[in-house]
Length: 607
Image 1 (cartoon, rainbow, N blue to C red):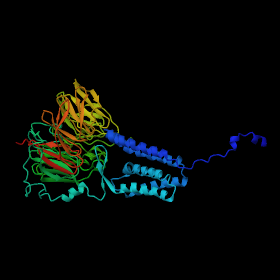
Image 2 (image 1 turned 90 degrees about the vertical axis):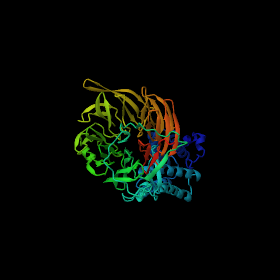
Image 3 (image 1 turned 120 degrees about the vertical axis):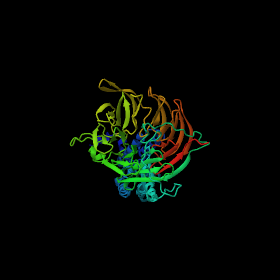
């Protein structure tokens, strides 16, 4: 035994250095810095809201997982302290969740409070060199309480087009509450109206040339014809005619003469509202007890009313389809399109289909519940009702979801209804509902919102945001068979819910938040300029004049050519998030609105 000991290396008899007990903090610092650097880069340079959202959603999860792994296995802290730190974070996160405003759910805590709480904890550990004292360890729950406590003081009023949260202190009044507080009896004058008397009763209304009877105009193409507007905004800027509060909702306007229609939320009721274009005074309103609400866009109807033959057809966010007397608001009939489609609940972002009236039918898109193998049901996504009686005449379609509206077109001499949905493009004979052709472009975990555009009598444009792009399809009929052929596909234009316009062989619209021009013959980008966010555009006349409203309510007069975009004027028309489509009347009055207010501007030529 002694011999074996004598042969041991001398180094073995030297005293061993004790294992380090100092906290290992550098991995946590690296993880936190990496998270915020990625966050800053995506926030500053990404034009893809979906990529930004994924960073904000999954980034905190990865951050939490990395910090937890370091904390439990590589921090060198005493185990009791490790459990203390984890327990404090979890306990305060649960308490914050229970006390948070209804709009700040677990997702809000994850995305906005968790990164701050974890970053604060790491910074505290670095400053205190491992929080070795009682005060140091009490600082950890204090920091978590501050981070998660802030989340209990706010509410989320919605999400911007870039998928940023709109935050307010939870005790402040909402825009909807301010609107409801301002409401007066229907016969009382609006605050902004110059007259002190009630508006006169309306005579039976008839559409004429220059009217805007439905979503995006008579052709649903966002092109205003036969109207001349002032182009020198330095000398004669747009004149505000009136302004009034409005209930939440993302409807646009239908305009017949000096009468306009829109939809809004009034507390527990969806309202179809008729008002005077010249004064903003309400003529009548029709209420249905219904409310659709979700975190991104908030509450309110999404569709735009349609005027036809003295009647108004309006579809609410929960699927109530009304046929009303356009002059009085008297109801003729009403249908629940979700019930008729066999749906259990509205789609994720609500019913957004503006009714299309053709050949005595009111056609809408209802969509369908996701497929269920245990209880398969036929898809009845497109519904056609008798415009006079409300009877269901036909149904069909393959699409499960869409936030677009039916589009009327004549292709190869055949009148047809074109639908853009998750399946791609589908076309139907309006009288019978017989499918004519389809172009398959399936999407998953994404939505189509833009209006399909048919031009040259045979070509159709279909768009998908968040990385999808734009495709042009040519439709041809050979004998009794229809054929859809893709001409080109481009990633240079990826509009989400921002419709576009066509002029002279070029497409002008939003590629994410930036205005862009494409050559329709090739799909190639001509230019990309003008950061107007996720706004909307109106084409005025055929000389390239456009009215663009940004998602922050800025109204821009722009001249569009295949070579460039030139701004001719700009004003702040509205306050707050603005996604609604503007409307220009035959008299040169521009109607704009968002979920908080609406206003009328006179753009007519003045001496």
